Length: 387
Image (cartoon, rainbow, N blue to C red; front, side, top):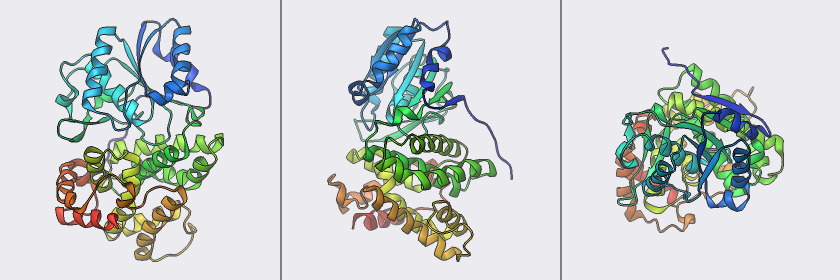
C-alpha cells in the first residue's frame, strides 16, 4: 500500500483553549477579519472572541452574515470588506459554513475575482492571509480540510473550492464553545462527522493512516453523540464529539468522502436543506446500496458504533445490512428526518432526474465510492428516501 501521510496546520484542543488565539496571531498582525453568523453574535460568543482579540491589541472587523448553506455571493461580499479593511488574518468562528467562508475569504484577500472562479480543484494561485479556525459545532471538520463548499445562487450549483492553500494555519478546538449548540444542530453536525469517517473508511482511497482516524472517530461518535445531543451541558460528551469531528476531518482529507455527500449536494443547492441533515437522511440508503461492495468494512462500522459486540462472530453480509439499520436507528434516537418527504422542502419525484445529474457531477466523492453509481441508481436512492 502506498499513501501520503500528513496532518495540516497545528491544532490545540481543550476547554478554554480559545484564549490562545492572540498568541497564535502573533505581534505582526494588527487587523483581524472575524467571520461568524448571527446566532453566535446573539449568544455573545463572537463578542467574547472580539474582546480577547482587542485585549491583545488587535483591531477586529466582524462579518456575521453567513447563511446555513453559504453562498458565493455572501463570500464575495465578505472578501470585499476584508480587502478594504486591510485584513492581515481571517478567523472563522462557527460551524462549517462560517469556517468555509472564512477560508475562502482568506485566499480572496490575495487573489482577484469571485469565489466562483476558484470552485474546482487546485485553482487558487496565491496563498491567503493567516487563517485560524475555531469550530463551535462538532461536525464538519472544516478546521482541518482544504475545502470551502459554496452555493451559486445564480444556478443553484453547489461546489467546493478545493486547494491546499485553504488549509487552516491553526485550529482551536474548545469544546466549551459547542455547549450552546441546540440538540438538532448537535445531532446533525455529529452525524456529518460520523459520515465523514464512515465514507473515508469505505472509500476506495482509504489507507491504514486514514483508517486509524476513521475508526477512532466512529467509536467515539457511536458512544457519545446521543449524550451530547440530549445532555448538551455534559462537557465530557462535548469533548469527545469535538475531538472525533477533528479525527473524522483528518480521515476525510486523506481518503475523501463518497456517494452520500454527492447525493446530498442537490438537496442543499436546489432546496436549501442543511448539509448535516441531508447527509444524515441519505446515509442509511447509501450504505444499503453499497453494502456488498465492502461488507467487511461495514460490519466493522456496525461494531464500532456499538450496535453489536465487537467480539461477535457475525456474518459479514448480515453485518453490512445491519449497518444501514443501525444508522437508521441512530437517526430515530436523535430525532432527525429520515425521509425526503418529511423535510417539507418541496422535493417531488419529478426533481429526481435533475438531482441525480447534479449528484453525478460531484465527481470526486462519486469516484471515491466503493460501488460505481449511475443515474438510475441515484434516482433509486432518492425514491427509497422519499417514502
